[in-house]
Amino acid sequence: MARVVVDVMLKPEILDPQGQAVEGALARLGLAGVASVRQGKRFEIDLAGELDTATRAQLHELAGTLLSNPVIEDYSLRENVEDAS
Amino acid sequence: MRIGVVTFPGSLDDVDAARAVRIAGGEPVQLWHGEGELRDVDAVILPGGFSYGDYLRAGAIARFAPVMEPLLAAAAEGLPVLGICNGFQVLTEAHLLPGSMIKNDHRRFVCKDQRLRVENVRTSWTSAYTAGQEIVVPLKNQDGQYVADASTLERLEGEGRVVFRYVAGNPNGSRNDIAGVCNERGNVVGLMPHPEHAVDALTGPGTDGLGFFASVLTGLVAA
Image (tube, rainbow over all chains, first blue to last red; front, side, top):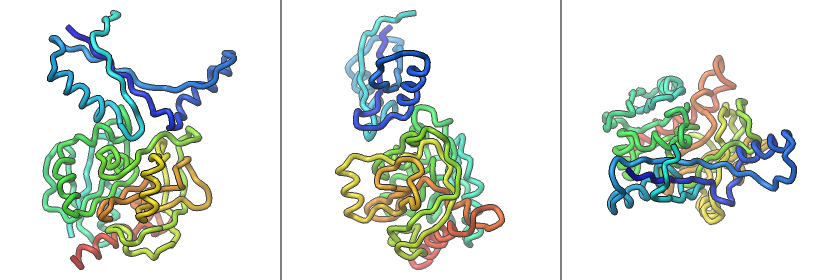
């Protein structure tokens, strides 16, 4: 079984109101010295079989359409990630 | 004139949109997201709400609904399409309209009567207005901040494709006070505020929203 992880983050130039809210809460809870917080999404995709070339291409395609919106977000895709559970 | 109104799982304002069509003198036609056909309608409205609970991103999953396939093809052929609020988000996710919406800059839900300026009256949905006319329609959303990169904004402004602008204060941080935009041809229009809630003085701030529906009906008669 292969695990693929897709991380999605807002592009650096896009304001992240959620990250700002978290940044404010961290400060209120006593964490000093935080310069900035940005919030993203992580998708863990477990494949029943092995990761082949066709599936890899399909995953990239979907990471750039369904999982992220390239107008505002960037994605990174990591293969063969160890299953932590 | 048959105006289709699409219902996605989580659509809220499909009934109001259909009612607005009826008040304006058109025949509303229910379209179901799961059916890949447009039932011979003359125009389509994607209504507001929270399709798929706004999971992933607002409009991101609805964009892949079966009804969107014939809709994208018909829009390319000139079918008038109006996206309101979540419907606008679906249209940007489908890349029928440029840019995207992110969370309001102040991070709160907005619900208010909003003043807008109609900047472009050459679209299928705004021909009943006069250029520069100000209208008041409700605005209610959480992800209403319109964003696009600098070159896209420049192109939109240069081509007159900013159709509506917020007046008397920017309610959500949208770039250039943009409340709504259109495609190059002007048949596809999207905006965050809700004209379908301003078609009856008893239930809205006035009837300023009627012009959207009057515009498309007049255009269809003339066509």
